[in-house]
Image (cartoon, rainbow, N blue to C red; front, side, top):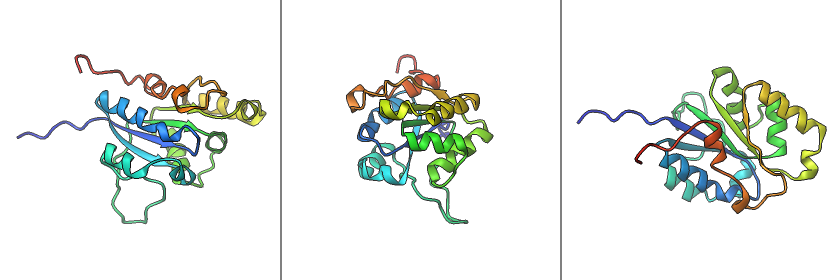
Length: 177
């Protein structure tokens, strides 16, 4: 039996947000569009998500910490990255080039590697009004990051438009699939 062609691989970077438990919506949508998915969580996001359920759904371990030199790579290189939900903290650190977590390290390297990346911010109106946030979004856009238009006041999982990340990355449904 010939080898199956490798499906494109999407990293979903999850931040600590009240909507984070709904990340399965994005994972399911990506898999329905014939993408393989691996999740990278910020350390605090681990307290917001059901890690066992996500690992069962993706078939891959959740990454949250750096691996040691010589340890095997648990995920293949990404063909695209969706950051959803993205917090005020992560957006500002990413734009500033701060790489103090695995998630931020991956995001900072993605720019240099030319990996298409989309971000769906999830923060309050008060946070969105901060001038650092606006400058950070401008910086990310200049880097080619595709920024979603999430309304800052829609902080419930049902109001969060998870699939917008796939649309921003132009990950389309498979015809007839």
